[in-house]
Amino acid sequence: MFQKLLIANRGEIAVRIIRACREMGIRTVAVYSEADREALHTQLADEAICIGPAPAKESYLDMERILSAAVVSHAQAIHPGFGFLSENSRFAQACESCGIAFVGPRAKMIQEMGNKAQARKTMMKAKIPVIPGTREPVLTVEEAELRAKEIGYPVMIKASSGGGGKGMRIAAGEEELRDKFLTAQMEARAAFGDDTMYLEKYVSNPRHVEVQILADQYGNTVYLGNRDCSVQRSHQKVVEEAPCTAISDDTARRMGETAVRAAKAVHYVNAGTVEFLVDAEENYYFMEMNTRIQVEHPVTEMITGLDLIKEQIRIAAGEPLSIAQEDIKLTGHAIECRVNAEDPDRKFLPCPGTISYMYLPGGCGVRVDSAVYPGYTIPPYYDSMIVKLIAWGQDRQEALAKMHSALGEVVMDGIKTNVDFLYRILEHPVFREGKADTNFIEQYVQQTV
Image (cartoon, rainbow, N blue to C red):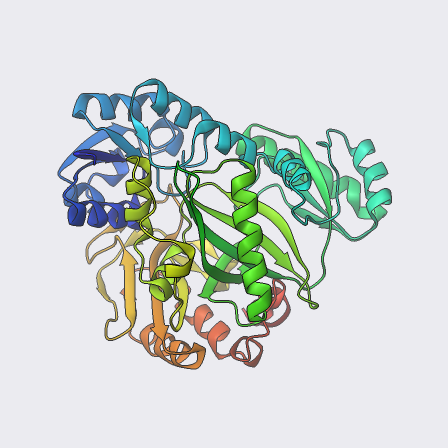
C-alpha cells in the first residue's frame, strides 16, 4: 500500500480523499493555488504545496507543477478527484512515465472512453445499446445537416470531448441546426480545445440513470446498483438519488450487467460510471462513461456501505477487489442535494464571498461533504458547489423527509445559495412522486425563479 498520496484537486473532494487516506494510514499532500491558501484541504493534509496563481490553468490544470510537487514530496500516488485533470489521458500517462501511480484507469482507457464519439463506436462494437447517431466525428455544419436528416429530428449536438453540459445543444429542426451546431462547436473549442462533434437522436423526456462500477487489474468487475441523476439544470446535475425507483428490478439488473460488459470491453480498471438514458418503456441506451469518481458517489456509498475512495486507492495499489457481485447488497434509499454559492433569482449567477456564519445539519442518516467553514472566503475562480448534503432512509419517503428537514437547518450568512431552489424541487409533486425526468427543472421549477 502507498505510504504517501498527493491530491491533485481542491474543495470537498480533496477533503474527502484526505479523510479516506487518514483511515488507511496514508500520509497526504495537498496542492493549492494562491487563492486557496486558507482552504480546508490545505489545513487537513499532512503537507501542502502551492502550485501557482488562482486561475486553474496556472495551478490545478498545470500538469508539470503538480507532478513536480509529487516528486519533491516523494508521493507514490496521485488521486485526481473529479474535474480538473481527472479525465486527462496525458496527465495519466505522465504519472505512469514518472513512476507515480494514478488513482484511476490507465491513460489508454481514459482516451478511449473520454472521446464520446470514439466511445460510441467502441460500445457499438461490443453490442452495447447506444442512442442512434453518427458513427464518425462531425466536423462541419454541412455534414451535420446531412447526418441530422438521416437520424431524424430532434437531434442532440454533442462535443466529442465534452462534459459538464458544455458543447451540447438540442436542435428541433433544420432551421435551427446551423446556429446551434456552430455555437456548440465554438463552446467545445474554448472548453476542451477540441471542436469535433457528433449527433445523437434526441430521446424525449428520458431518465438519466448511471451505474457505478469497480474493476481491478485481475479482470474482476462489479456494479454497485444505480443512481437517478435526472434532475438537472443546463445539463448539470442538481439532485441525485440511489437507487432509481422508476425502473423495475429486472431492468436495473440488466443495466448493471450491461455496464459490466461495457467496462470489460475496454479492459477497464478502477472506479467508473456508465451513464444511460432510459425512455418511458424502460429501454436504455449507453450515453457515456465517466472514467473517474463522480460528484454523486456518496449516495452509492450510503446504500452499499462501501467507501469508494478507499476502493479506488486499493485498486491503484494493485490489490484485487475485496467484494464479489453476490456480496453487494443495496439497503434503503439515499438522496444528494448540491448546495451551490449562486443566486437563482439572478440566473444562477455564482456568488463568491465570505461566509460570516454557517450551520450545517447532522443526525441519523444525514451526511455532509464540504470544505467551507465560518470566515472562509469562497474564491471566484472555481465551481460554485460548496456543500453536498446527503440523506439516507429505509425507503425513498423517509430519505425525502430527512433531506427536507436537513435543508431547513442549513444556514449560510454572507453569501447567496440555492437552498430555496432545492426546496422547490423537493416539494414539487412530480419529484415527490418519483416522476422527474431530465426536463423536470425547465418544465416545472426554473420557471418559478
